Amino acid sequence: MSTTSAPGNRLAVLRERAFALLFSAQLVSTIGDVMASVAVPFAIIELGGGAADIGLVLAARAVPLVLFLLVGGVWSDRLPRRLVMIGSDVVRGVCQAVFAIILVLGVGGVPAIMGIMFVYGTAEAFFRPALSGIVPQAVAPERLQDAYGLIAITPALGMTLGGVVGGAAVALISPAGAIAIDAASFAVGIALLAFARFRHVRTAQAGKRFLADLRDGWDAFRSRTWLVVVVVGESFYALLVMPAIFVGGPLIAEQFLDGAASWAVVISSFGLGFATGGLVAQRLRPRRPIVVSYAVTVLFAGFFVLLAMPAPTVVLGVGAWVGGTVIAISGTLLETTITRQVTPDLRSRVGSFRALGSQVCQPIGFALIGAVIAGIGLSGVMWIAAAAVLANIAMVLGTPSVWALNDSAPGLGEAPAPG
Image 1: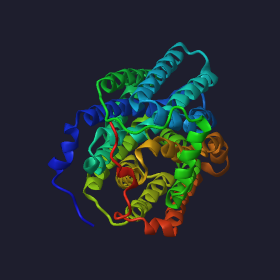
Image 2: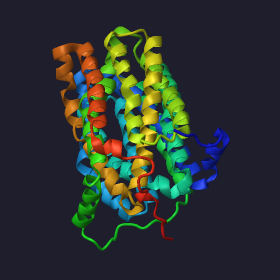
Image 3: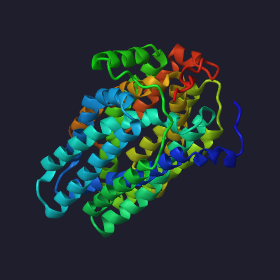
Image 4: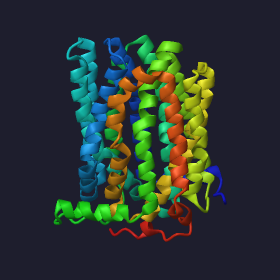
């Protein structure tokens, strides 16, 4: 395992104007998103809802991701990805503004919020594939891993700042205030992307039929067995791990700790961990990146053990920092590998199949989490989440094609882009 150059050189990727603007836009938007993620569960609780209501609201956002990610992937390979991202940000910003107004006026309740989240999730289904394909258009090929390392730091900084500000906004203003700030953050992100100019790449042929484009993306996805296995594992995360964090976590904070303030500490600690992991990941050049990517995530299971206890806020914060660190390392190595193994004209479609597989079980998990908590309790949910993390690691590391993929494998994603 080798290292790269000094940290200052790794940060040189920010000298590329398009990437600097993309990074800044994502940072601002992520800060707002994290504020909203802190606020939403407590907004539902403030309305008199419980675990089932929180789960249904989050499921309403997840359902359109399953329905429209493939559509978003095709059009993100056909249209300028920057414009797709801006359009998505416009819709999501409006959704959050309406969400905040509904909370202030006290109208509509959970059904109205679910409707807003469905529209939000639909726009997000176009944004995610576009983002997955646009990073290589913003940087030179030799700086790709440095770029992904900084992209991993984006949620890190966002979670650190957004967690603190979001917790304070919920406590001192209201959940509606935190969500309104998120709406404003989309406007800032849109302005930054509007000034970015990305490299042209070969795109999907607009004259081809939609299903033909989709089939090409599917063939590229399924031909990579290691990626299919990774996505199957991510579906377990969506079903068992994500609901435990986003529904069970805030409820544990509300019932056993100091409510939004404690959960803000946990979220911010995850952010610090993402920052740590992103910096570490920039230095890593493992020969078998997917193996290392999953081996380090063993430590993530410990976070759920701490939630199951539940541990004091400070201890949970340390566990979240460790968890965020290994998740950032894992994510950077995984994203870099996928990008290098997929040609530019297919990246968004392959990314959409990956995102679909990762998301398909999430609405089910969120819809059922209330009943599961009622049946086995919050502690039981956390033990299941810890087991799911370990089972996912075992499945991926038990796959021969994962071990066969190494850093000397053909760089299928490094073909020169025309234009």
